[in-house]
Amino acid sequence: MNKIQSVLALLLVFGCTTTVMGNEWANYYFPDALGSYWVYEDHNGDELTRSAIESDEVDGETYSAFTYDPGLEDWVDFEHYIRPYYYQVGDDWVAFFVGSEVENATKAATIQQTEEALVFLRQGMQEQIPEGLNISFDIGYEIDVKSQDYFYFLPTPATFNEEWTAIEVGVTLTLTIDIKGLPMEVAGDANQTVTSYTTYSEMGNVTGTETVETDAGTFEDCLIVEYRTDASTETAMSIELPEQPGVQEQTGTSLTTIWLAPNVGIVKLTQEHEHDEASAALGLDPPADKSFELIQYEIKSSGSESE
Image (spheres, helix red, strand yellow):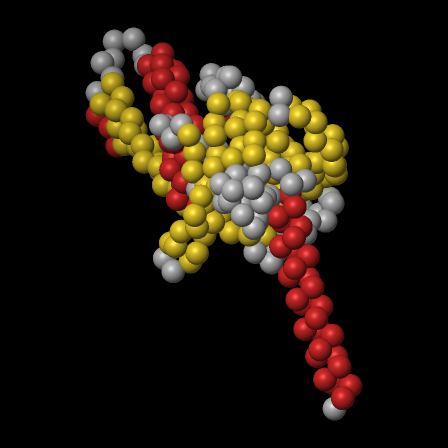
């Protein structure tokens, strides 16, 4: 009986120690004391100030919170890495509660890309109309986006070169093509529907440490965290074809790298995009590369707002 009690005591101590280590490690690389602030400059020279504010309760859950200046004007500009409003620092993860924001941002970006693609699609279809036929096209679309609630920003503690699933997002795009003016013998093919189902999986990985210099100073022993986005797309068409399009896999559609400095947090972010063949065929440019660098900051003591 004494041996059992001793083992239980050791397990309890180990569990408590692991929790403390996890939280201390998170606070070391993701400090968030009330009143702290960070000022970033992006690739366009625009500044963004993040400030740690009082925690808030959402659906019975308590979240730490940030506020931003300037506020977000266009969902296309939202970046879940740098601009979470609510987050939690737990025993296992620093997790951003950004599901709704990611859905809004992904939908806005998909609408923008779809509108650009439709310009080339309409032009290509119009060029293939035989002379003498008065045919027009009415193309509409619907977009549905589903994201998991949390973006798992960083495990606490993290292990080098051990990947984790940071977030998964599903996008359903349905194109409806109504062709007017077709000859009677082919009029049955006047209405067509094309639906694509895309799943984006973002994988995180802590790859090492290095020294980073920004206008805010020189930061040693920064964690390097990479987030690689892979995409899998399946397309269904209403028209009967000899062979329906299969599943298309894209690896590394984007690579986002974040540097986390001890007792400071995010000091630098870069984001690069791969130009895939499908987008190139539609005449679409890849999303612009992005960057954020810390130019000013103040980290308050966790025990006092005034220090």
